[in-house]
Image (cartoon, rainbow, N blue to C red; front, side, top):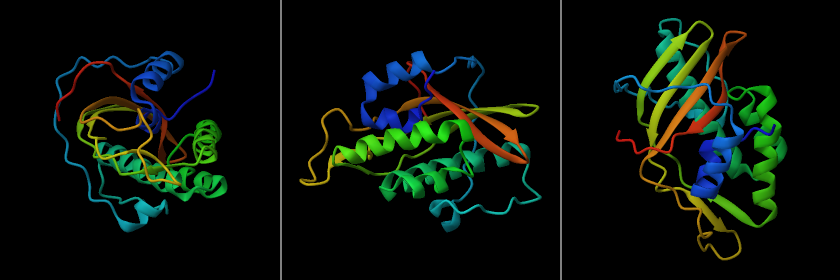
Length: 194
């Protein structure tokens, strides 16, 4: 079964790809708990470049999980904009499960090969974080309205690639060798409000 980076795929072909991803991604999340707003930590310049920041000893597990998601989001954005498979793999490695990297980079490479380029950055709005042992689930309502794909040659927007104001996402992370890594993301087909 092929795994897909839903946040980035949703950007590409919002409705069609998201529906396909939901079918392909294992559903192990039930989100019925009340949402609790969680402030996002500030992004360091190193996180935006994909460099691994040293973990702060004073961070709570919840803060570590959120920081991992923020780092992942920045790394995916940098990987997409790199237009280079080797660079993309290197940028994703500290944040994404190893068995997911090749499929994610293959998807990006396919987009680059069509002469399309990524633009914009999503805005995360974490609603809740649930941690159980080595597993964490982050429920967030992202604003991807400033994101999408454009044709490199013309700068024109790729039809169907524009983001949305509220993208309801659940991200599963696992603690592996002392680092929280994104395992998969699932787009919920219900409205959310940050």
